[in-house]
Amino acid sequence: MRLTNQVRIETDEEILDKLGYATNKLWNTANYLTRQKYEKDKTFLWYFDYCKQLKNNFWYKQLPSQTAQAILQKLDGSYRSWLKLRKSNEKAHIPGFRKKNSIFIIPVKYQQLQYIKEDSLLRMPLSKRFREENKIQNKFLFLKLLFPLKWNGKIKYVELFKRNNKWLASITVEITEPKRTESSKSMSIDLGIKNLATCFTPGKSIIYKGSEVLAVQRYFNKEIAKTDKTLSTQEKDRSKKLTILHSKKKKQTKHAIHSLSKSIIAFAKENNIGKILLGDIRNIRKDKHFNKNSSQKLHSWLFGQLTQQLEYKAELAGIQILKVSERGTSRTCSGCGIIRKANRKYRGLYVCNNCNLKINADINGAINIYKMYQGINEPVVAAMAQPVVVQLWNKHNWMRQNSSKGRNLAL
Ligand SMILES: [Zn+2]
Image (tube, rainbow, N blue to C red):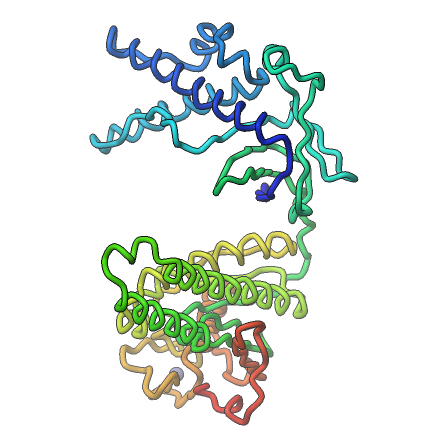
């Protein structure tokens, strides 16, 4: 699997600025040529045409050849996807020109690079022409990575880009697939809003409550509204206070979601789980708590992030993860299998009129997901979900809830 690191770099910024400028110029030159060709005879130029026509071009020569090629490949790809898109969407935008103030992105192929791990250095070549013109002796440019890579593996692709006046490297590495655990044990996860995640494996359940994470959201929403009220329209655009509040809100939510996915995978490892059955998030829209809240966008974002993180963290832990449909799992009784519309009766409690089962509604859902994908028809008794551990977010960590409330099935 491939994972991408983003790291600040320290280097001769003047050189990178010049190279960045050249990448934009080369892109625009090639783009101009293909547009002209199109006007003339309604056909486009492609990668090999670009290379042929531009190999002696000034901007091409400024760049290391593989970087120049990578830019032309990218333009080729942009035209191909645009033509494809245009079939279904007339308004699709033709690949544009890079403007004076557009950000610099310098692609660097791994064949050009050397990674000197001990010194956290990346070494990339400079073109002969560029060195001559700028009177640079060294054949190479060294990029010092200011932070250790989060993901280590074989480097496959690097892009250097400038954001907020700082140069960064986006480094994609290939990680050897971790060995799959051989355990045949499964765990199911039901995602929701009241309880963000409810995990079930026979003999144990764990519930991650959403209330504290949503409280963080509510707190910041209130502060943002308060600040917003006091500002005039012009002030809003450049209010630092608003920007800070928004970024704090995002940062704290992200932190909670990262800790959550980490904790779930740790729980799975502790219990020797080989396969995770993850309920599909599309079902969350039907959650009655969903519509009450106006921040649907936030919830979609939050569950998108959580799903993504669970997927790669499971894979890194050697656990197989399957996204599964939750259809009907919240209405079905995990005890007797009867499907009823109005079975969810008390706050968060599922009560079955047929077999008198009383169980936390989300655990009921998680058990049903488990049963559905294990091909189990016989009832899973509620006792199999015991003991139930409840986790609360305390703004730093997910912590076990220590109160008698934990024994209440409704939770
Ligand atoms: Zn029942």
